[in-house]
Image (tube, rainbow, N blue to C red; front, side):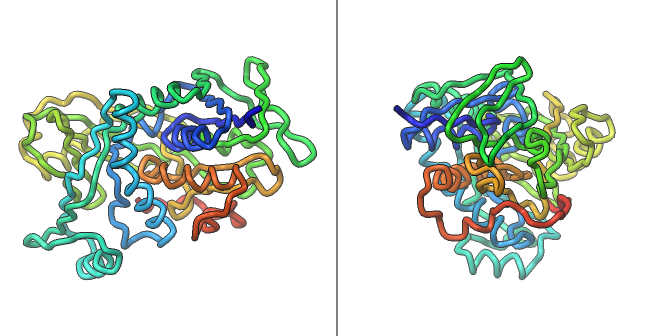
Length: 355
């Protein structure tokens, strides 16, 4: 009989963890309080790069770059298996001042990241992107195809456990989920679901608001980035503009002030957007974490509970590499070099606003 694993949280991290464990022979049930990919994994922009990596710790960059490197093969697999194209493209990113000058160039050269200076801007030709909603649709279809049981709109209660192990996890409807291993990948909701077992985890929701425009196809060929603001062009002419970073708790409402701020930045960066149709304005809740560093670890008190959460702005980017580390933990395999950097935290740091 296959060993059973319950994964709580069906964002990119949870879905790819489910796929990785299913391929290793586990009987996987994936549970989410909403729809698959319906929270931050849907809401984000899909840039597969840690934006200004020279401002981050090496552990953040290594996980993000490792995850990003797997997307070409992953998206081919998803398209072949499901017929849904996540629209991966290595469109490149133009970064305008102030981006760090010589520090940025030296970092790229040391880490083998292709880089050019174009007048006063930094050109990163290998930076890729994926279209988040299509990625999540493809992942859901792929999981169904490999036999993963998906339970959407199933809210769980905070964890209760005894004797150093999780025996069952109860839903708000009093249904009991039973497995040999439990994996928590619920993003901004992970701390609340851990309840008394959250210990030193200090992750919290950080709201990000985005705008969506529509222009002619091909008008903007690559990502533009300036001073914590980006424009991301999709193949069909849609352009995403974002994003805010707001400590607003679990409030997912959008605000007129944020819309005006994002629109002003968008128009300044690409003047054609001033007269372009505004298609949509939305927000998502990122799992904010100290220094943008996720936790991917076995729980120190419960030996069959594993955590993969706190990826902040880089959940989609980091998800393939995070899923591999998580699977190694659950399966008792040798861990990849550097995986101990994502161990359960021993301090009480607060999420950083650096993004």
